[in-house]
Length: 188
Image (cartoon, rainbow, N blue to C red; front, side):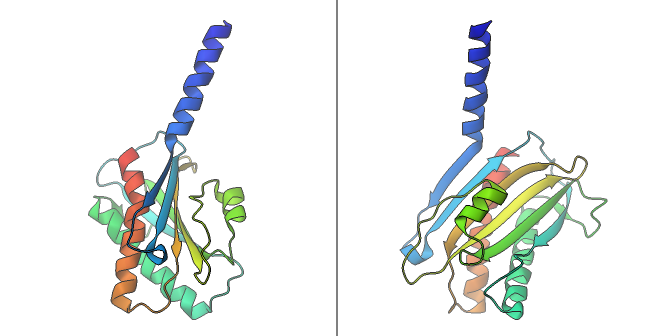
């Protein structure tokens, strides 16, 4: 009996560790460095064509102006929707029709520390701080519409670039969202 319990414990630990993925994305410089981490919480999958709804989450106190926050969230809203649609999921504005809900949040480390991310989100890629660079995080999670339970969660950490053109910002957002959602698609 002890051997069976020991074997089951080992298998459970192995599956839990295998569900956690940390992948550094190699880039040209430290300023462009990204770190990505995700975890699958439930073995629920969604077929091609499944409906999703999007729900942004905001940090209560932020060092950014309201206008800056609105622009950043609008950009990431569009990029997340576009990425999911490119991967054959369909957006709906009606949460009651959705098979799953996609929540996301964006924050600078000075507003939402790694410690808080670990406490509230339970996943952190642990990108080290760099002098003179502002570290930020994009958190995305998938919640099952029927059960209300979290199915998957992922986070990307990188450094904020304040002097990018609108086209460069969009390209950077696309890279960031693709890096983290790629891990969701691989396990879906």
